[in-house]
Image (tube, rainbow, N blue to C red):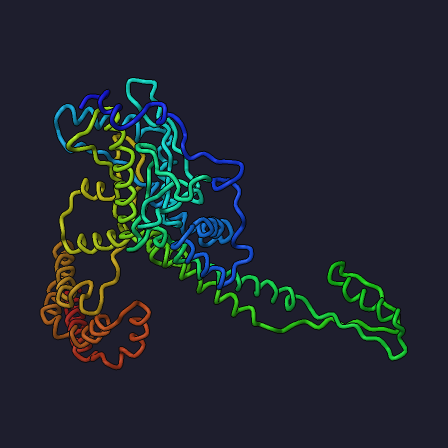
Amino acid sequence: MDLKKTLKRFAKPKKLAQRQATATSQGVRSVVGEPVANSITPQKLAGILKAAVDDDPAEFFELAQEMEERDGHYASVLSTRKLALIGLEDDLGAEDSDKKAQEIAEAVRTDVLENPLFDGLKMDLLDALGKGVALVEITWDTSGPRWKPAAFDWVDPRWLQFDKQTRREIRLKQDENAEGIALQEFKYVTHLPKIKSGLPVRGGLARLAVWSWMLKSYTLKDWAAFCEIFGQPLRLGKYSAKASDKDKRALLQAVRSIARDAAAIIPQTMDMELIQSKSTGGAVFKELAEYLDKQISKAVLGQTMTTDDGSSQSQATVHDDVRSDIKAADAAQLARSINTHLIQPYVMLNFGRQERYPVYKLVIEEPEDLKTEVEILDTLLSNGLDVSRSQIRDKFGWRAPEDEEDVFLVKQKEEPQKSADKPPMSTALNRQNLQTDAQEHMHDHPDHLDTIIQDGLSDWQKQGDPLLDPVFKVLEQAHDYAGFLKALESLMQQQDMGPLTDALTQATIKARISGAADE
């Protein structure tokens, strides 16, 4: 189907270039609404929720808007859920690999995705997370060879209504038409997130969070009144029995004034006392408010770790504020709405109907706990696993240092003291070293006493074991240096000096005899 036939069948340039959902100074499309949250009560709230389903959802949409303006916690978690999608990378793929499909995909990328207003469109569509429905009107630029979006205008949900029969078709309110008017084709991007099954107006997060929000508003009001009464001392004025009515009025005025001015004057015959409150009842209000905040966090984010529980940085990074499965579902539904109500109409208007259209997606990269990765890698490397340096750098997103580039040098750690079952050096090796050192000394420095020393060392194990065995036993059992030193204090009682003393005595006698012979 060529472009002219497409335009004749589907759209008129003049209507596509003009706004349909415009505001009026009065009537059903007024930009000014009546506040709803000021006088909210359980009975009134129940009526608003019922009317949203049965008749007109305008009051519910107004209340949902005021909730975001009045409650910082609800506004924060709802904004977090929205921004989790805004920060994702856009991706567009052609369903076919032929030249025409690639040409269409490139046109969509240029005219739609790279439009500076596109991120604003996504944010406006995500208004549906709270209210259950969002509508954005497209104003098309029809002056060029390709018709492209020139503006995306958020439509106030109070201007919308649902058809009376199914309560699913969105219609635009009109003063002279109680049924509303149908939305012009190719003019609107509609987003109806399927957070739960049922009617769209019942699927918004505001409907789920509104009861906790209302109870919290009551709690904060009571808490403020409690602080006003018990947060400052009781001012008690005392007057004598002879006090006149004038004196009593003066004392009452002084008691009232001292709270504002911290100063007052009273007659000398009267007395004023400040009684400090010792009430700790405020904790009840605080705990209730925090509990309600947690319920809102669970409803909006699917978890409370990154908002309420004071979790660690690594835990918060893994949770990434919004539960990953919720974010994936939100991303898929938002992309589906953009594909259906923006990209496909753009392709139809410019290239005619296609069997397959380019598919827009939001790319989600699963967060990784890099601290755990490092701990696992350290364990594997210490057990002999061979890993490529380039693979490790790719894992953490680091590049290899270039030539002559300054790099951080890590000081090698000293070997920790071995445990009892792995002594730093075996007992047999220590003993062997004693004999080896003595033999090397005699070989390098021959002397007439070498024979005497050699004879004495021939039985070195018999002489040394009674002395060294207790020492090596203590060394193997000690867990640290301090424990080893402490054990040495009682070590002499376990050592047998006899064999060594006998050997030294014999060597001394031989040395004296040898010396006398030399003389």
